Length: 118
Image (cartoon, rainbow, N blue to C red; front, side, top):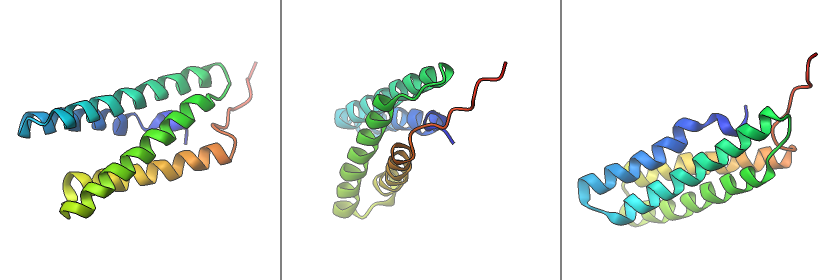
């Protein structure tokens, strides 16, 4: 599996921010959700472009790892304070899984690029 394959999770981050704003008027949710969503979509785009060139984008992998780790920390703290599963517990769990996945990708040399066939 390649690091750019998780586009739905990237988009969900942005959508979650918009929903948080619409339901509670939380500008922090809007900024955080859209900010992390945009950063993750950008990283996915950079990684996909590098993949098409048969290269790895370590910048994208590091950006994805950092954003996922920050989301894990922030939403994990929020879950510990409130005990609410939705959204902080779910987001923290998914972000933790993605952080582990991105660290694995970095440790194993990035996306495994198939050789060019001619």
